[in-house]
Amino acid sequence: MDTMTATKVLGGFCGALLIYLLGNWAAEEIYHVGGGHGGEYASGYSIEVAETEVETDEMEDEGPQFAELYLAADIDKGAKVFGKCKACHKLEDGGNGTGPHLYAVVDRAVGSVDGYGYSGALVAVAQTWSPENLNGFLENPKKYAAGTKMGFAGLKKPVDRANLIAYLASVK
Image 1 (tube, rainbow, N blue to C red):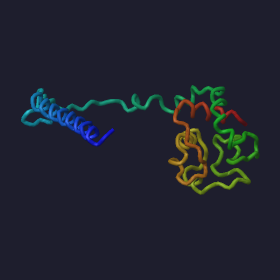
Image 2 (cartoon, one colour):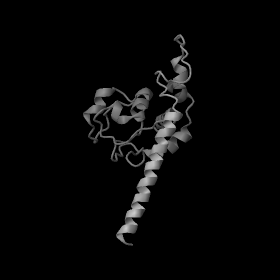
Image 3 (cartoon, helix red, strand yellow):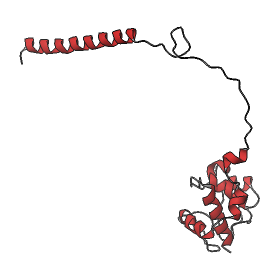
């Protein structure tokens, strides 16, 4: 392709772009409906309403409380959820893994497993591993006990936590 042909092709593209941009500008000017922000050219109507306070029961938004879920917990489902814990924890008494053993963990004193080096973060948050304390810890370990060595992200579903804690309570 020679220089003259290349110049014609480039000129054709530039001309087409110019026509497109001018057409776009003309269309915006002709069919402009305003910014919609309450300015001079805003379309539509503004309807003001009085603010009212709506009282809602906070319990409805949160769903069932942990105590209710724990009472209705399914131990068999908790055993399945424990599959996420098996990599680091053992259920045999004295059988520590990466984490301490979980034999009789429910209502056991925090940081009481012999032979396991706990981080100080756990001992500072609770005295015993009550179902409520376990629930808080299992939901988000790093948030519940900042500085804990447990690298698990947590169990987000309250039902899974209740089932797991009921299962752990049955291991004695």
